[in-house]
Amino acid sequence: MSNVFTGRSLTVIDDFSIEERAYLFDKTRRLKDAMIAQDEQVLQEFRINDPDFGMYEVFLEDSTRTKESFRNAAKFHRSKVSDLNSESSSFNKGESYADTFNTLAGYENSVFIVRSKLEGVCRWLQDEATGYAQRNKLWRKPAFINAGDGKHEHPTQELLDEFTFLEDNNWSSEHIHIALVGDLYHGRTVHSKADGLRLFKSVKVDLIAPPELAMPESYLQKMRDNGFTIRLFGSIDAYMAQDDIAGKWYFTRPQLERMGERILQRQEELRQCVTFRREFMARMGTDTRFYHPLPRHREHPTIPTFLDETSLNGWERQSINGMYVRIVLLALIAGKLGDDFIPTEIPKQRNDEEYILQVEPTVRDHSADKDAYSEGVRPIHDGIVIDHICKGDDPATIRRHMAQIIRVLGLDNGKGGEWVSTSKKDSGIYKGIIFRPGMHEFSRKELKRLAAVAAGCTLNVIREGNIVGKYRTHLPPRIYNFSDLACTNEACISHPSHAEGAPARFIRTADNRYACEYCGKLHSFKEIWIK
Image (cartoon, rainbow, N blue to C red; front, top):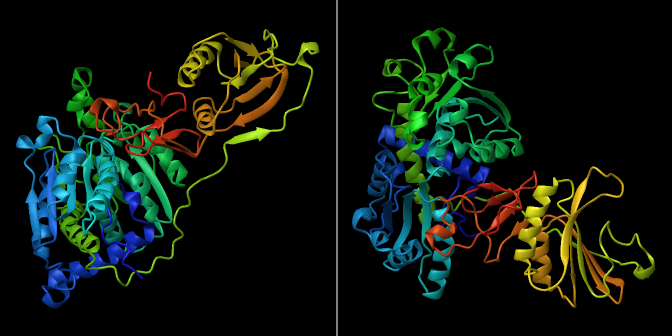
């Protein structure tokens, strides 16, 4: 059986399954013990020892710990490590990310460690590099490690966090109760925990942040979907006013400078909400540990320096663990480790449910049936009627979305009409109707577009006054391959403003919204079309 880790990318934490992460942590535990004992025989089991195994660090945002942690991990492996100077790079000349990284991949670089403000960039590069490697017969497909992408994720930080949590949990993955404190809005390290904490069978998360710094809805929803117990608190003071206090606290630095002058005027008040104070010490248990991805703010640390010499200090060991975890991750991607790993988890199955249902039409003489159509619709001899559009929405919303449907389906030329009607069963429920006379034909792709832009509608195809084709649409499990789709997140690699050519792709969520495959932003099916 081939090594499942060789050449793998880590773009989000969920790219590695729970059992794959457990394997990585077992190896990291062995490596750490060998490092402490300086057991060279064991350390050799981990070293890649290949000067031709090229690693490239591309940090388009400032970093100290992550960058140096990877650089020292590469030195441990005695492999080639290069650094792209972002200030003089081709990015500043307008070259695309894909062209830049494909070029570097052609120079026998095997792993790219990328930090960028653009969210989803590693997922896009992974897709692009796969095709590039195949077209050019590269002997090794390059792998991409996300070292932090905007407000999205930081999966290697999540790996070292999980390892440290396990270490302090006596290596048990049965249960974790953790408080996430600070800037939960911008904090990509806490965003990775929405999926990362699935490592534990039972998860209780206390989110401590004022509304201005609260966890985005997309990650809250993901936590709910993953079965986490979630509690929300506006400040540490409010949290300490109740009795169920977590044994693990994870702090993040408030990034108030990103939020404009209005927020900066209230910065002292907001920092106070998420900064630990001496008066709370009496409530801390002997096994309580604090963590922080670092760096702490020099002037306004959420974990004050007086805590450095206390038993609460888990952040220093957490930081050191970062190099151990990244050494093992690189060894896995290089194929040095992993031959003895046999996966047992069933891979996630792609949802291929049918979302366009053809219904057997009833042949009727509509010319004699005044109730065959909704109120205000005059029967047409040949044409189409799209009914039940946005049923249950208010009239203004329905009218706006009908205009979008008409544009997306190319129905804005010729005769016809559209209006808002009410349900025959309930006059308080509104729905939209579009009709177009003429010989309209809907291909399978056009039916997909109809389902994507008007989920829940019914399409009636009329010939000689009879319905000869009837289709009911549901929310598709995936929406992609349409040039007029767009994620609304301006920081997403697929956003048109970046001109990268990354095609918009969306996955339906459990609550019937659509998550961007690159950045994870949630949308309704009405929001994903270019205006």
